[in-house]
Length: 267
Image 1 (spheres, rainbow, N blue to C red):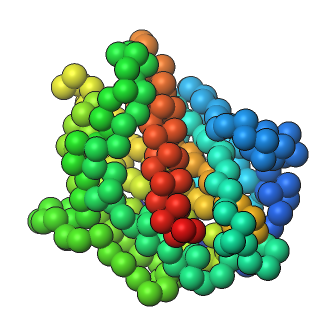
Image 2: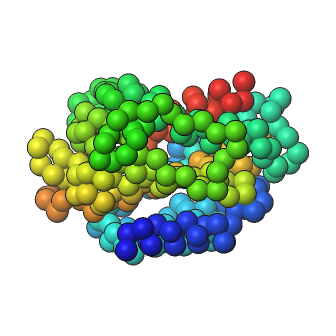
């Protein structure tokens, strides 16, 4: 049944399609677009208990897919973010046209799971920077767990699934499934935890109860990056707030990582 759900999530995106790239203002509200273009930083929304999408870009395929995840997961925590990566002027192509070389470069950078090792995030509880992933590697499967090199493609495949082992200093050693797609002028992945996440030996998020979606839209002179983390966390007083705050800070760390990787594509 789970494989069927995943298939229909991706089929919905491919059929609805990201056929054309679009101006930023066609994807998000003008207020959010103005804030991002002016360098106002990250736009973030955190919701607990009965979350509903607030920052989702105007794309029916992505909305349908995330809505399916919400319906099946029934999350009690959600963190959404919007950010903008401004391409250097020399890399601008025809308006709202993402050429294949740029797209392939970004796709391969999103596959570079090993480069997440050692990235830092701000820990609100410790009021200091802390290592996010002590270890991060693509593996040959969720059972064998043998590390393998980050995959590299000469052009993005329509669909791709990889597995990763990532040791998080807060949530422990976890196996994840990453499902990638690259329809039209968009690249995205859905991440799912295949083992539980624990906080101080307490299983805070059970197997399959965390989904993170990251989508990159080409907007001609920039890339719009949208992410949403959805979790069905342990219902303990204060636990949801703690996990939500942690995920918010981690979202910023992932976006900084993405910008650093994108820089390598647009040198």
